[in-house]
Length: 133
Image 1: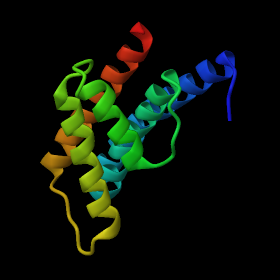
Image 2: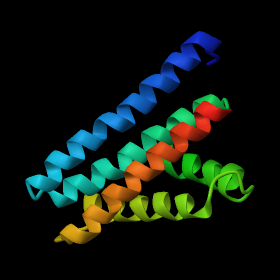
Image 3: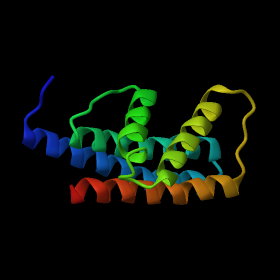
Image 4: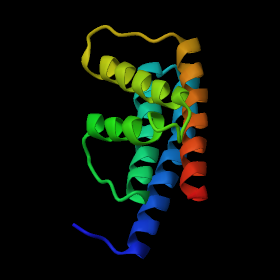
């Protein structure tokens, strides 16, 4: 499905807004000791920002591994975005998967707080990259 440029720009903005809205959700989850749910939302905040990046470069998928692979190949490996962001999204995906599907998983507050800071940095980096292109 091909979308026109105005719709594409609107959808990019929507995905970035969605990512930033999750920041508020994560703050609430952490303050209420809902750490496993916070990990899930942290990952999705970054995922939504990558959906926006994909739209910017006319790459669309709903498959998480495919989107992250595309990001790593075209932006991390090419040196357009710092390698730390590839590590951040991969770590978040692994922890989100563990939290969502494994039994008896607990996350330490310090780890969740660190991931929250990484998420905010990640979203800012992706938004900045989209806006400068």
